Length: 187
Image (tube, rainbow, N blue to C red):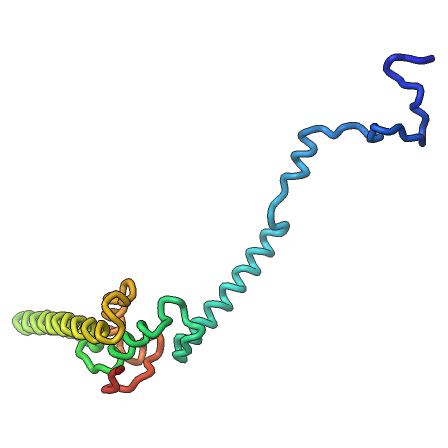
């Protein structure tokens, strides 16, 4: 009863050394088992990630309102950025009143006609010119004072835009919150 294909040792319950006791799995079945998402439940993982990001943003925004440098975003941290902020915050400049005054000029220009409207527009452009010149002078002075304290090579990347954006904003709405009073220039 010995057949070439059926060995005589195929007795149920008895294992023959070198045999695995089950058929070889199909390749497509094995590949299908390996193909699964890295994160099992993507909806829950995304929801959890959004919640963590929201908490981090809230913590950063709270730090910006309070002036707590430990939890601020990286672009606002460090003694160099603090020096730049404090210098701008110590000044009273016409630049911080440019936006509210421009709204007033727009409303007034809608109400007046003729020569008065032209004069109003000329006054507005004169104010913008004065603010532009004053901002240019302020950035030059700030750069000189910063270089004296830290060295010119320590100027943070994008410092000019950082300073101008803070300078043109009303003091009350600046973030991070100003830590110095007007006239208290950093040393």
